[in-house]
Image (tube, rainbow, N blue to C red; front, side):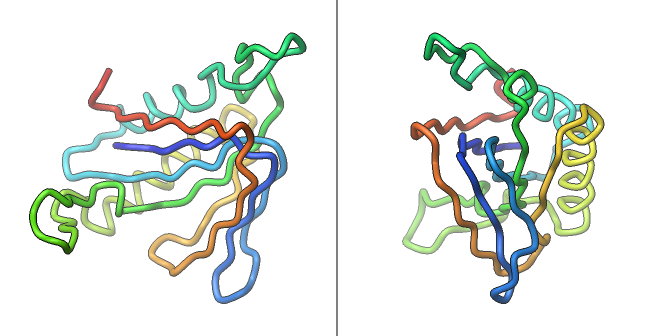
Length: 148
């Protein structure tokens, strides 16, 4: 499982020009699922995302987690995180999980974060979405459950 996390001052996601999710201060998390991901991968990355100390404390140092900072999450499923661009000019998505399994693990990822008392706004799995965010910093990290 792979995620891109972006610290955000505010963010929203739209489907067919309708806002379906929005947050204030927090993280925009793009979530990609591959074939061999398990519930353990989900739990690992959910905990990593909410406990990673990437928010500034009163001294201006990155010393606070999402939980410490009272942040929210905008979670967006994004199969293109497993796009392979090594050959040719058109990406291959053979490493992305099948939709049913990807949706199941994406939903579980969101539930894991919600169980920690964090508000999670969500995109619509499989939809054409427009994501708007005000990146804070900018602060962006790529996390992969296989790197632990």
